[in-house]
Length: 430
Image (cartoon, rainbow, N blue to C red; front, side):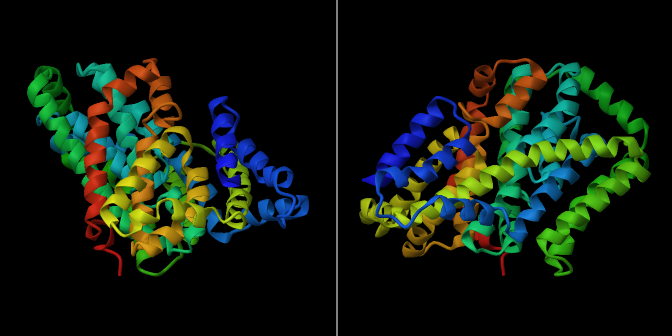
């Protein structure tokens, strides 16, 4: 009963737009007033908050944020988009398809959905508009495709899930490769048929591609080579066993500084301090959420929340199909009202005993969890990618959301395939 009251209070606080980190901190103190018999006091809560921020794997998060910001300032997304446009730009829906592929590759650099949406959208949406593409659809496509940034490794949410569940971050990274490619492929398929039906301005598109191809393949490839090489270096170093994911995050920063400062020369030494300031501003709220979510998760464990939830849905555990459907529906709703990091930190300790009882691989569940929350990036009211795309285009959030509905359905179809065909996630995992 106490667990239900706590979640009820959380829902009300979220509805009145209290910041999630504040909500989690307040809820950690709630049992003190509702049940004095619990072994929880102020010192316990403070220790848990500090402990939640001391995990070594968390060091990878600010490093990946920093490298992503450097790459964005360095114009890496433009280099990637040009090389993909060179090959498929004159095909049906080729330029929007190139946007999806660019998000796939940029996600392997930034590890963040909003960062991918911002970096790719800032550069590609004006190009799509010049070529006669619809502004609303372009904004929706970038917002949806940006969600690939948390599925394609290296992924910041996978790092957080690995820390919370005790799963190998390297294995999670591997598990995200094929699901990310599958979602990207289905999005491209939809875009192809969409423009097959609605048409596009072939004259403008062919002129733009002709201008690009006049530069020659060698020129385009040379410009994009270092950008294309970045995910290979980062992921290759992890999977070869040369570095840990945390060390790879530092390697990504060194590589980003090198290519932006000395190869592309798109940033200067004077830009480094503002980039560091932006990184701190981006990471500080996440760090506070990590600390408060850690203590909230600990409080839920002491309240035996996993056992209560297991008892309430115990009948579903015997039927894995119904259990997985129920989990997916629940996670989609959670993604609509809660940001990714706190959702992972709160739900992982609750669901781990349940998925183990149901015989579900924790790595597979991690992919299911992250894909569900990726859909949350484009579903109101939280839908961060929608707000990023709206800021870039000045199109209202709800307008973009409506235009994104068919793309969300495609995303959901991919989610069902990933959920019920575990090999998609586990094929590359040893």
